[in-house]
Amino acid sequence: MPTILSSTKRCTALAADATPAHPANARESAQGRRWVIVASLFLFMLINFADKAVIGLVAIPMMNDMQLTHGQFGLVGSAFFVLFSISGIAVGLIADRVNMKWLLAALALIWAVAQLPLASPTSFAVLLLCRVLLGAGEGPAAPLALHVVYTWFDDHERNLPTTIVLQGATAGVIIAGPLLTYISQQWHWHATFLTLGAVGIGWTVLWLCLGKTGNRQHNASPGFAAAAAGPRAAPLCFRRMLSDRTVVGVMLQCFVGYAVVAIGFTWVPAYFRLGLGFDATRAGWLFALQVAAQIPLGIALAMVSHRMLKRGVPSKVARGKLISAVCVVSGLAYCSLLFGAPPFVKIALMGLASALAIQTFTFGPMLVAEVAPLARRGALLAITNSLVTTAGLIGPVAMGKLLGVAGDARRYEIGFGITGVLLLVVGAAGFALIDPQRSKQRMEGTPE
Image (cartoon, rainbow, N blue to C red; front, side, top):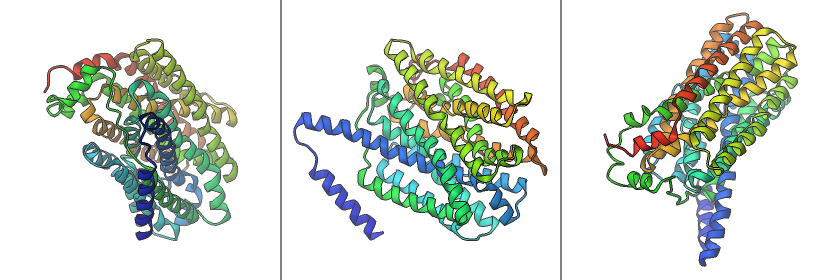
């Protein structure tokens, strides 16, 4: 610990000495610095999702080694979410009042601590406790990472950095799939947790050297910014913000989107092996390739939305209707699994469906940040994220119950089909509810 602290002091001193005095140089430095922050937070999300994905990647050897039933393993998957939402809300309430540099470092250190006990043989109780602790550390991670990004970028600039940071989640799963499977096969599944613990400590040191928040305090309209900074900010209660139509629409879509994420991490690798008959290595690569589809789709959708906004298309269409249509297409792809298809076609359909569903977590935070009062933005991002990720507590257990003892392919596909129907419903709800301009006017209106 003294070594980490001393290296942090040296990094801070070097950063202070390197600060340019000339205003033009200062602007150039700030432009470069904000992309360094984006890159750091990309790695933050990469580790975050590798930590989540590992449990599904070692599912078969872990279940065999610890003699776990499908029901018990479903409980392990859901244990991650026991404190996930509570932690997100609790940390979110103080997010606008504390130093984000130290807060994110503390979260990453918790992740590492939660992985290390699983680096050696352990009991079912310790396994559950470690997953609960990891969930508590990861609950606030994504919204707080975006909150830091939004201090460096104005609203009209946020599509690309938001997409980059959240693609760290995709990259984490892509890298984790083959790499952690290889580590598990070459050594033992315990070695995967040791690896992730060491990586978490490494990122913490890096962030303590580089991390910093920006000073962008600009929302779309001057009146909105003034209202956020003025006496109205304090009385504006969370009940009013959480009942807003746009926020409700976003939360419905992200709730189902996160069910896709949680079920995917816990059960999709097992489905590839037990349901579709692939061996461990091929299942790991197929899982990684399926997740990789999220990157081009995510970038393409972000570019389409950005260009629409530049042409003057309202955010209601460029963000709200676009992501609602994406949910509908994702739902149709999942439902298609019920009609029978060759294994590789099923994998392609699942890849398309999950890649589209996960985009709710790119567009959702941008919509919430767009309508949130500045003084409440960090808290509202964390609280809405915490509420929607309760889907992670329900999804893996529900799938485990559905699979029962057999865990055959048809039961897996029924579970995915149910998810598809839910995506169709929330897609339709988004068309009716999401209207950022109207929500912003409501937020600026009569205080509670």
